[in-house]
Amino acid sequence: MTRSPNSPITRSPEHRIARSSMFWRLWWRALSVKRSQAALALGSLMVGAAITSMLLSLYGDVRRKMTEDFRSYGANVVIAPTSEGSDGGADNNKMVEESALRPLAQFVRESPGTSLVPVLYGVVRVSPDPANPRLPEFTNVVAAGTDFGKLQRLNPGWREEGEAFSGELPPGECAVGSSLAARLHLRQGDSLQLHRLAEADSGNAARSTSYRIAAVLTTGASEDDQVFLPLADLQAFLGMAGKVTLVELSIPGETRDVERDVHRLAGLLPGLEVRPIRQIVYSEGKVLGTIRWLLLSLTVLILVIIALCVMATMTAIVMERRKDIGVMKALGAADALLMRLFMTEGAGLGLVGGILGYTVGALLARSLAMRLFGVTLSLSMWTLPMVCGLMIALAMLAAQVPVRIMRAIQPTVVLKGE
Image (cartoon, rainbow, N blue to C red):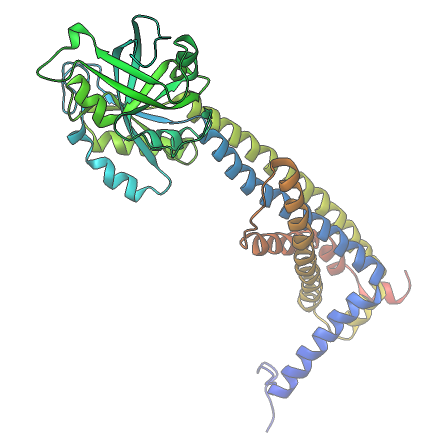
């Protein structure tokens, strides 16, 4: 039976296996014969992978560390009565009804890492306690009623003077700021008697009560002049049951994340004003944005340099293999086969360089994280496939110029020695 000239050639499975085996033998031979040049390309890719891995790992750690540091400045969002007057959750005295804050419970459940603390502010009068004659006769101070343990966790930068306490204020105990304590000659363990102002008298609420000072705080802000009480105690003392002045929230994330949650809260609390503390929110966003831009720019610059180095090395390899390429073309090897062989060689170098560079970069990132930030870096496994993928793509991109040179090689010219 005569085969038509235009009919396709049918190859047996054994033929395809032999051809594939020959391809990979040629691939390994190309890497092993010119070991010095292959090692140079591999070293360049390994350096690029190490630096990329280190910068990516450090960026994740720097972002986490900076976010933790900004959290020490306290709340970044405040919920307060609207400035227009009584509407929804706000009354004529600019107070927020706790009942209007019920949607916050669902928001906190759906937003991991978010914490909130309701606070009631009021002006009270401090008078000498019989057990503490050192106090001045009368002094007006700002009292803050809140869950003190949550407020302190929201402001981890606050420091206690004297003996540490549990962080919770039971009924009958209070905490005072360091400036107020110095002005009134107070210390931990003293007693303090609070009086309601005459204009704040209402109903049958107690006009005065005594509190034991459980802690003296240094905050570096206006809280140094305040006295902190349990929220229920101050509400009962001022006759404002179920009311707070504002709610402080700490929402994790970058500027766009915080802004998105602010809009969501505004929809959940239509009668209240939800506003970010922009000095904290935008400062955090600006710092993180600058760090991201810096690390990204450095990574791109380094990858461009590595790509040029790999391109020069692979071009030199092609030029030295001109006779081998000419012989292969003379024996019938198509440009597509030679191009696949060369691209596979570059991809292999990229994969090996990516794995080795990732290991070196991870060790460098762990060491730098401990020296710069004093924290142990938790490595992310997503960095490994990203780095390896980048190195493979970089090697194949750098091989484009050598591949064009290889396709332009003419067997007759090369074999004549011209």
